[in-house]
Length: 263
DNA sequence: AGTACCACCTGACGGC
DNA sequence: TGCCGTCAGGTGGTAC
Image (cartoon, rainbow, N blue to C red; front, side, top):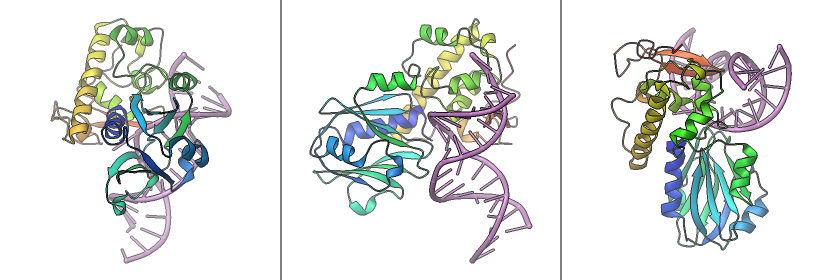
């Protein structure tokens, strides 16, 4: 489920396990995830170390000694795994970084919608993709500005990486449930009201809680929507039935008795 | 500008 | 047990 909390978890795995370790070899098991030639990947990594791991939205940027960046995107099914014994490589490891110390870092990606690239500058990459500010570090003022002069449905906007980066289908459902807003509510009916403050507060609260749970590998809290996120399940707040709803062709879920459309 | 839909690719799952 | 349709959390492009 790689949205901001899961990507942040992956970033911390890299930070804890891979920084300052000498890279002995980079193994490419499937080139489909590469947005860079294998030769360029090898040339930039082999015999060098990673200096830092950063994140913007759903992208991870690993800083290289030469000032360039290794860019990782997990796609729909990506996960970063650190392991010691070579036979413990995950099933869908597409790229594996073998460190001189004997540990390994796998870019596992079943459906291969993920992406591995090398870029010269992190900022220009973010600019080219036109990514909005990171959802976990955006200020309330900037959030308000990003929402102003927008029409459309609030769920679509939360998922739009060019408005703010990091939230996808699942966490947009969670945030809108926690703030008790119907996913099809119009942004302009929220932007100039007290709902905006509540939306921002819930967004930050949901993301912080989810990051903590994911990092510690603990289950999400009882009041969270995600564990109940399927048609006909019981709402964790009112015990009503959760319904499915389509937004721009994506299937989302909500509680019709808790989440009323704002008009 | 906003929305719907398709494509990318692999695998899991439920129904028959 | 096996076949088949459906669905899946990502982004990007198209057409309306």
